[in-house]
Image 1 (tube, one colour):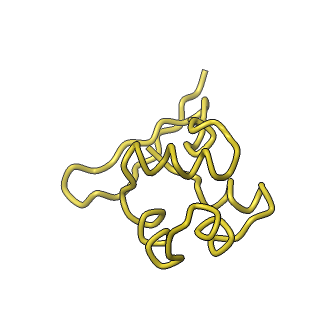
Image 2: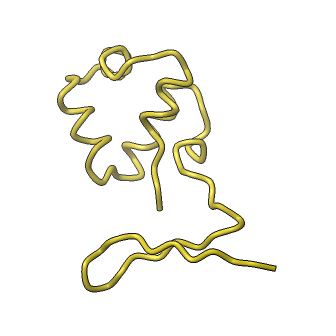
Length: 83
């Protein structure tokens, strides 16, 4: 599942530093959370601080394509669906 936390932060007119200050945490810690694999609790805290539903932090699936991850190398494989 793709997260779009950085994009949402920009859309809301904020920076990582401003969001970290609002959340009362260190910018480096927030960056590590955003770039890593954030927990549901962290996602909820970020969404609350930004002022958006947590679902907005997730990328929307492309209806014309399917993406799977290769079980061997982990790379994304895009499969286009034709009608």
